[in-house]
Amino acid sequence: MSTKIMSKILITLFVGVSFLAPDHAVAQTVFDNVTIHTMTAKGTIRRGRVIVEGDRIAAVGTTANLSIPPGAIVIDGTDRHLVPGLTEMHGHIPPLAGDRQDVEDVLFLYVARGVTTVRGMLGSPGQLGLKDQIASKQIMGPTLYLAGPSFSGSSVSSPAQAYERASRQAAEGWDLIKVHPGLTLAEYDAMVDAARTSSIRFAGHVPADVGIEHALDAGQDTIEHMDGYLIWAGAQERPLTEAEMDRAAEMTLAAGAGIVPTNSIWQNLVAPRPLEHYLSFDELKYMPVEVRSSWIRRHADFLKGARENPNMAKHLDENRTKLLGGLWQRGVTVLMGSDAPQLFSVPGFSIHREISMMALAGMTPEAILLAGTVNPGQYFSGEDAFGAIQPGHRADLILLDADPMASSVNLGQQTGVMARGMWLSAGEIKARLDEIAQRNANP
Image 1 (cartoon, one colour):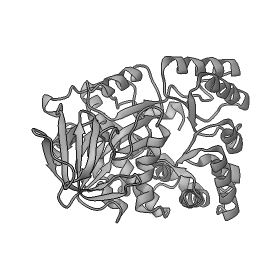
Image 2 (cartoon, helix red, strand yellow):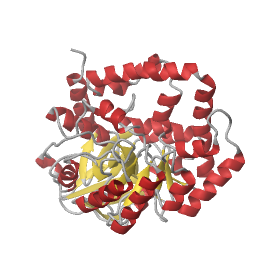
Image 3 (cartoon, helix red, strand yellow):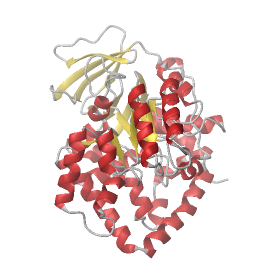
């Protein structure tokens, strides 16, 4: 997405703060008699027990070998399943302005559907302060890792500017540099030189002048949306071949890079369904009226484009599904991301639509869960420990009513979410969502 388009999409959504209620500042919480999907070499623990102290997992064991600390709050996990919180590896934290209530609502939508970590991919002033406030539990929201303001053809006009901008973002404390389309090869390489010197990672789109091979060779550590592969292969109006997927996987594995497919939103953009399909999304009621209206207007443009070139729409849609499955089967690291909030892509809820697209591409329930937990945890392993259920990891957890290893759909059967040790029951989540829906009802 261009910065201009993204700004237009997000203009009425703002991320902000909500001071935590005292009853969420519990010293010890125990998940008891639960099936624990540790996402470690220990695998699945039946009749398990997990002890949380503050914002960390303190102990993991069974009901037979791990005692409940005196005074701890106990959450009954009988016939339930515990998994790590999910990560949105391509989310957006809107500019910090506007109505305070809208700000709080956006943050809550992420956490409400089990997204406890977000890699924000379009930085703006003030976001670093927000990140610190969330991390210190002053406010409720997902843990944030943030890219700075993006590098694009409209924000960078020379190699010297690209170098200076990248150096400045590293000094300011952003977690990574976001690459958008439009950079020249010289500008991209200058950005890369500065990133290497300043030890800041870079990720995002693949500019046309750069190409996927050069981006991977340069060290771009995630390829967003996979569009760079299809352009490289010239497979925008024909089927992608097995040989092309072999080569794409070979290049990506050699570079140690990962992919963030975002197939759910890109289907909406390149091969949109009829408007009635999207209006049936129950989660739209949690978005402000003006945002929903803007999405409906934009949908008409994308639908018109797809109908004017149905062959391209068909192959872009089919090739993206095929490419995701093919790269995963060949061992490429897949990282979960949905590019929310975007066209009919509601924060938190959109991850579960992305999960459906991953399943459609042939990924197994375990692989999908890895893409949302362990793989992002490894990506950010130099920053913190999260993405698995083991001592010392951040206490980001989802309690489920059904086995996520039996079907990835069951990742949506949530009975509660814990973010940094703060527990939200299904009842609390529903009550807050009902309030958000009421505020955003048609006037």
